Amino acid sequence: MTSFLTRRLLLAIPILIGVSIVVFITIKLIPGDPVAALLGPNATPQARADLVARMGLNKPIPLQYVDWIWAVLHGNLGTSISLQQSVGSLVLKAFGNTLILLVASLFLATLGGVVLGTIVALRPRSVLGRIVSSTSLGAISIPQYTVALLLLLFAVETGALPTGGMHGTGDGSFGDLLAHLVLPAIAAALTPMGIVARMFAVALSDVLAQEFVESMRARGLSQAAIVRHAMHNALPSLLTITGLQVGYLLGGVLFVETIFAWPGIGQQVYSAISSRDMPLIQAGVLISAVVLVLVNVVVDTVHALVDPRVRA
Image (cartoon, rainbow, N blue to C red):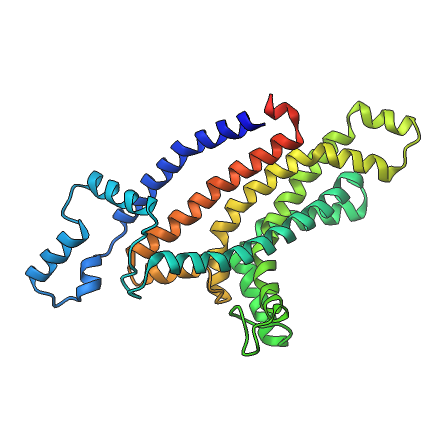
């Protein structure tokens, strides 16, 4: 297992290097002038030249990348142009808030997907199975921002739940956080839930069609025991599906956070794009990409622990 994890971590290194290059080049292609954003439109040519030299923007692009990645490896993500604060502290705080929303959404998506997928696999031709299958297909088809807007309208009309933010005017208790978390978590989780439900239904159906299941039925095992064994064998597929949804959620929470004013990395990057704050955009995208790569490593490792064939 140690050798498998070592190989997987070594494979992640070139992926992370490629990710950093793509992020750096993408930010360079975004329209906007960070020098003008710092000095204003009426800056003198000499002031612009001094700032360009200080920021290293007069160097060739490859050298700019080397300087940037060297600073990142030493924990220096730069200074926000619009806020004039350390980008590292801003991004880490926002990502912590996004992580709360991500974990809650992933929990709802996985739990709901497993329940719905199990119903479809066990009762594929029943009325309930057809309803659940159609519901999961509808969940996949509806964009996250549409669901978020509908839930926001519901909250505004009924006043049942908070319409935005992470905390209210109260004491910031855990219950207050949960109340603010409900709507954005549901909005972010609905599409991944539909995907997990449909994919898990297929995986569980394949396991239930295998010969060892018929053998267990012949020995008189209960339906609950058979389903438990079948779900254990379908667990590697569930891990893979769930790991893929983390990437989808990291990209999709941008709309959800913006609509519900959730102070996460998505809303921060959106605000940074509006103000052409290149260091903040760069750091937010890089952190999200690195986390996605590391999540894939964790998923592969857990997959190997559950299924010995992967280690071999």
